[in-house]
Image 1: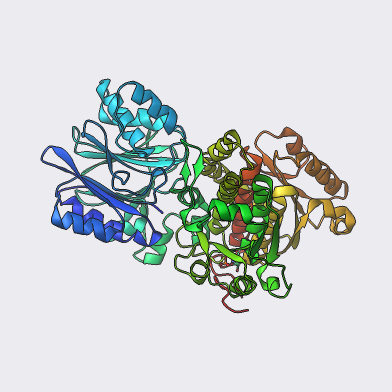
Image 2 (image 1 turned 60 degrees about the vertical axis):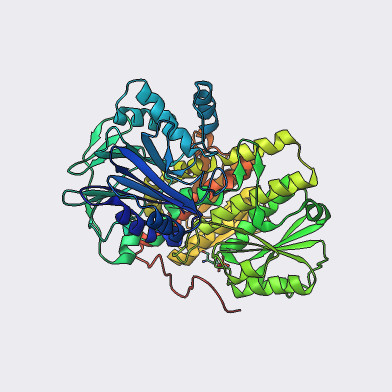
Length: 613
Ligand code: AGP
């Protein structure tokens, strides 16, 4: 999870920035850096590795001055090296940038700038931003105008923070989509900027939260907020609690709501350092997957519990479709009792946010006992499921506090998609063109998720309509069938309303008897290969007087005319559609539970990690 801290004021920026980054470092990162304005120029210190290494570097080679900006980073483009660490200076050395997110069109922009003679120093998409700002400054624009033009030209969900040595009295920042927050801290004769409130709460409790597609110009005495078109906005000033937990929630009422919205940044981070968009390649070094191993794997068991198991059910579709390796999903608490057939060419892949779920660990032990290969997809660094595995993929989403899992559901969907591509390439079952196309689709993920989350207000209206229901059926087909299970679980575990996920095709074999005016039916009907089948499913439910809530692709007028409520999602490549279809279901469960006044972050009877069998 990337962290950003900025400072404009009379004090030395360096210690303020380093201390602020320290408060964000539990999110995980692999490089850090700081830039300050001093004596007419911008000085940068940055290093791969932990913040302590940057602090040592600054100790040996001090930089003082203000304003300043600092950054901790998961490497998204380019390996976590000093050369790729933020902040990045433009060729002139007069402008510096830090960024969270993915610039989806960076390759095109980089080609255009290279053709104009710009020499890039790094492999990052971030450098493209600062070179573009310098391009517009060279064309005669002022710093703010050049920044605004750049913000409007880059595509994808991003947070961008810029400083210029030619206009050193200000920091300019923008939030485009939902790639993380921008918090502006209001001080006396000084102002602060950060990606999360805890970084600056020792200095001020008065903050402004930047909204998506807004930019800000922060100077000592003034904070101006604008739309990306330049129209001034009068933002609301919030007073945050000194309670660090409340401060950590920032602009959100609950950790679950924050983590639902954090998924754009979490999805960006789970891609971090693993995708070479230029070459169309995936790198998962911690999985230790060699060509020899890839070609002798005969079967993969995916074993997990609860939400993680439903993520595995999506993974089955992805790995079988892309890598053509047989996959069987077995619930963690059942695996060791099923006497599974495991050979030295069988992989047992465990998925676990906590990495400490007893049933999942027991399944891994059974896989080990039978001589299988153990892999895991885990969020908690250093957890048991990570340590005992022969190879692993870290979800890299940062800590998940809410008991109901959200970002630790969508991140493994991307991780399994990447695993499938890597496996397929090593087994030679996909050609170069197919692989490049599958990899290119990953660039869309953060922004698609952000657009799906932008519908929260509409979802909340549907939640009000459903707040008194006593049960709900969730129906899905194909790759979205597991989303029916996951959506039902979200509703059950935080609103205590009974809900049941079901393969839509199974309804006619009995459960359709349940449908009447009292039993609403939620149908997952995005534009995927099963769309037509879901249309008839909606018709069957309506014919029995059922209230239908449909998850549909934006613009699907056919479904709009049939369903009682529609939760809209952006069109996505079908193998990535579960990432967007699950988001309104997370929001729906969250808002129904909130309307019912329930403890969303710590639902009754539940623990975040079930370490007992
Ligand atoms: C999901 O919202 C629940 N909190 C629960 O089903 C959870 O997914 C399950 O207990 C597995 O936890 P893990 O991912 O930490 O192994």
